[in-house]
Image (cartoon, rainbow, N blue to C red; front, side, top):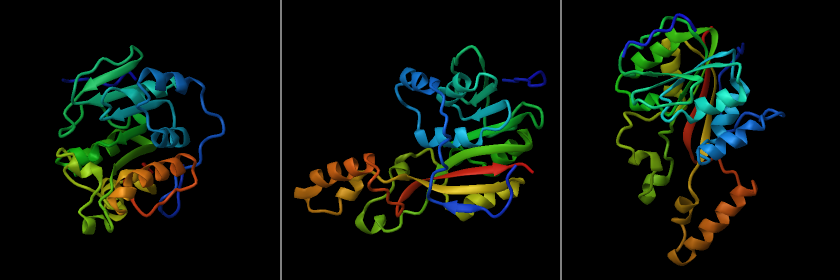
Length: 248
């Protein structure tokens, strides 16, 4: 992308659901190799959203951290030009362009450069939410796609039992979201929200807390086993909200 400088189609009603998008039938065999190199730190839920909604060949990974997802995309979709931004300086693989930037400020990239922008687990960390989301809109090309996630605010019945979501222990979070507040934030910036999904089942350890101490170990193991076998898939409690939005 020649114009980048470093100074430091879906319409219709919004879907609020708790189901993950269907996996694409053909998944790149390269993804297993990338998972091995990153210590299996890739979320299959996030990969499914990327597989389903990746659009075009110019991609920006915002709040990229160690560039695990940028690296996965470059391996599985080598035709993509992948750019990664984070406030920390990291050394990604040679074919990823890394930009160190303060996400609280204007990002030194020209308008409408990217067809897909990733914003996983980053919007909740900035003090000026409106500034960042507006910047993502500015950087997104017309008909481009924004894919991301934020922590869910609805603990439902957990506080009554002196329990809560694990993400509330992260003191760097500035805010939490419910589907309505997330949709409003994205729409204020100009995005058309395509879907908002509740994801991230609560740990079996939390479920076990509702049982007598003598049974908790067995409950935790049983629930974990049933989930891995995909026999149990409760959507009553979901710790994350995943979203897909479009710049019309």
